[in-house]
Length: 74
Image 1 (spheres, rainbow, N blue to C red):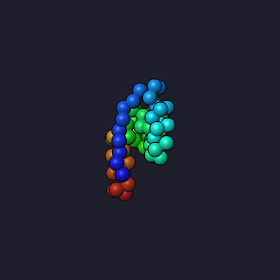
Image 2 (image 1 turned 180 degrees about the vertical axis):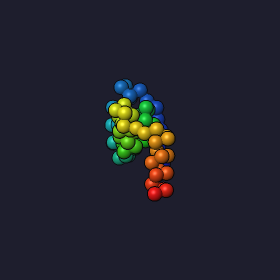
Image 3 (image 1 turned 120 degrees about the vertical axis):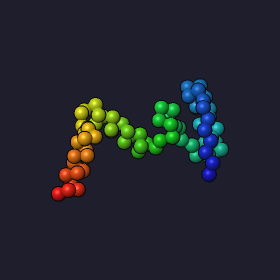
Image 4 (image 1 turned 90 degrees about the vertical axis):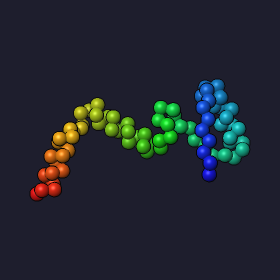
């Protein structure tokens, strides 16, 4: 399998390109330029993490190390 990356004007070129690739029987997927080649699962994981940060559901480095040490040295 070979991957081809093409930069296009999404509004102007995308419909024609999708039609052409479909007629040729080629599989394709769109990679949003903000997320590069990340999978949907990876993107959702990042978004979930950003929501956690915004909601204050995070631990500092020191808190994580303290928890790990507590479990290791019980």
